[in-house]
Amino acid sequence: MTADRLFFGSFTIERRYDAAPERVFRAFTDRDVKQRWMGCEDVRAPVIETLDFRVDGREISRGGGADGAEHLFEGTYLDIVPGRRFVFAFVMHVGGRKLSASIASVEVLPDRDGARLIFNEQGVYFGEDGWAEREEGTAVGMAQLAAWLDAQKEAA
Image (cartoon, rainbow, N blue to C red; front, top):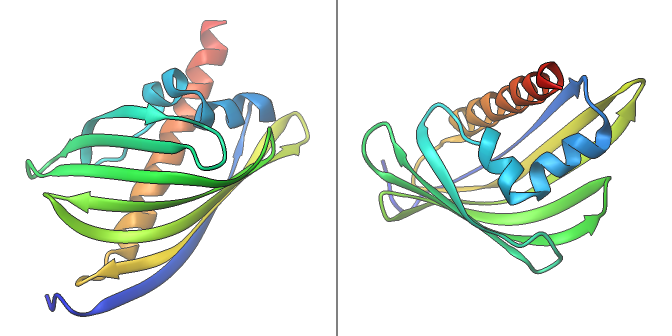
């Protein structure tokens, strides 16, 4: 690894959910709801410390990695269209080291009797290329959201 190298990347994940668009959107914007489904396979038991869903509001979460290193997410909401989309900028730290800085968007669109989610992330990794792992972890998180939404539907 060369600490002075920058690695740029982007990815888009599209997924259909068998849930109302309002429920899918709320899953990202309500701290208590998001705490129930968020995370990825590399971070155990992430805790959302702050989720202030408004323009210029902050989101902070942290969890322990499989290797014991702390994973810290620090984000700021830049644009919000309620019920439809939001854009946020964030920095990821792992083990006390700044890993990456990104800008991301989430769009939630009506799709027949469900919702279509479009997640896009663009950014830079500092010193190592981690885009494949980031995309994989984000896809796992979107699958966890699907499982949580399905479980809520079955419980109702």
